Image (cartoon, rainbow, N blue to C red; front, side, top):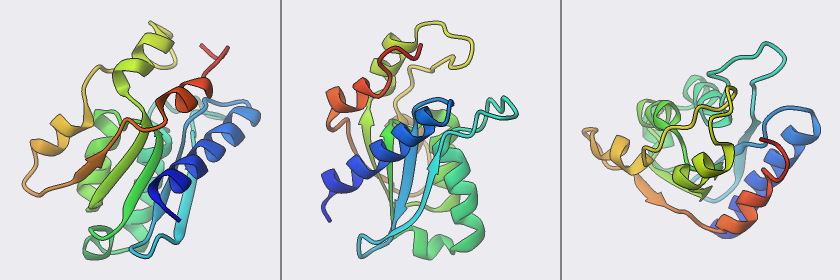
Length: 154
């Protein structure tokens, strides 16, 4: 599978999250060979966890299962650009590459000042560039398709 195929799989995870009544965000971890290792939808509900972003939860799960050395050869695919918290989690877990659909800036224009998603307009590249190791970032990709996941939600 290529990057766009795997990115669309993260969109499918986001659609499932929406169908389950939570926010439409999805993420997956692909190994060095492109095999999907883990996937995660938004975890805001049922406890209203404001830190339950799909990427953060996925990186917590990944970091307890895999070494940073292995994760440095893996890719995080996510329906929306990782926020500062999620980018930090990916960095600390040791992820080597991130591919995302919807940009954080575009997400902010969609969600406005919704209290369940006080979106930061902070590109994940800035977070990663502040670190001591390199994280490759590719995105936004398929942004219109990614944006459509949020139609009528916010």
